[in-house]
Length: 464
Image (cartoon, rainbow, N blue to C red; front, side):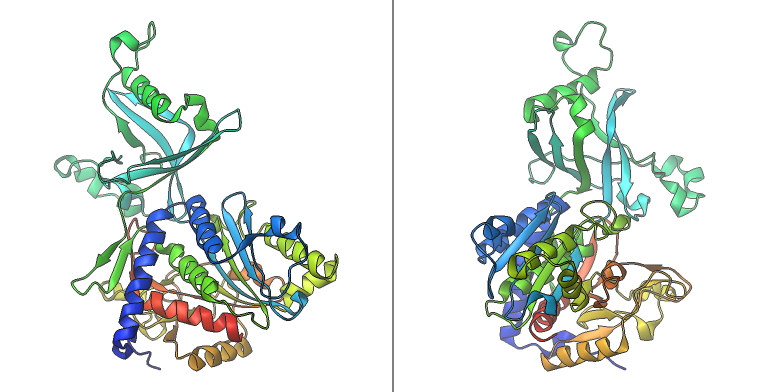
């Protein structure tokens, strides 16, 4: 079976729309380098498209067909609904993606000084190749919650004139022993300490017997700019991410190189497709953007929590009265695209892929009947009948798409949120966009696949 290169079919109108869409996509990546920032950006886009906050809207009356609503969980997860003509218990068409990405987090007691250098101690989040993160210009994004309830937003390193941070590496001249290590051991987790200062605080400002002057200077600067004390690290969520903006890649500007495309490429395209639909559809549609997928979908903002189910129960209660059974029916009767990135075929590492079952850049949306690892362990494995319906929908909308799996059978594997949603008995299949450099500081995607994903998600919302 051959899947064609999408670029070959585009008219000039397609190219104009494709380029405009990808400019919006790059802006979304730049403005949403953390899950909190993604939610803020998505809510702003939703409100501009006429969506209202769910609980505020419910105070004014029961939702009706055509109403556009959204709910936020702890500023890290988001669900959007456009109410359909049919009762909610008949099911929804759901687009789901995650908005957390692999990164490095700052610990709760992080700041220390040694030999005139100040560092922040860290703990990496999700699966990363630690050696890829050294010597890169890095930024810090996040929040710090103070005891008085004030939440301070922190973003350092993104303005071109701003400072940046770095994880240092050993110079090649002295690294013979390091070069003999396995890649997983070249840089250790505890070795990823962020260099944040070298200048001591003026002696006149040092407290009596205070010896760590560089550390003291860092604390003084944090106090001056953000009003933060050292103890505020305890109640902070500070994420270390690559500094800089998403960029076009290639002489032909056909690709996007950026941090966080796993899985914000699927989050953006799902959200964009949802916001483009203005007609009242037969079924209620939903776009679900969640946190914590990279560490197992755990926690209150991950897909394994009951938050989404609770929101659906609120909608059921508002539209037909409280009913546990109706809530279960609404979920069981739903269809879902669990959108996450696919491993793009890289000819430089061909040994890791089975070419006939690999996802290729520029060949459109990628559908994965199953994910998991070795023997389909931990996968959803979608029903054949549902795949047949997906083919009908995509072909009817003339969407470029392909079917793939994640590498050779015994090489490795990965997971998504699909198996969690499948617990309700709904139809779920993994879908998304192929990327290169998955989980690296900078990931690579095709602009054509972004364009095709939006087309495919819109077709699914209308016709599933």
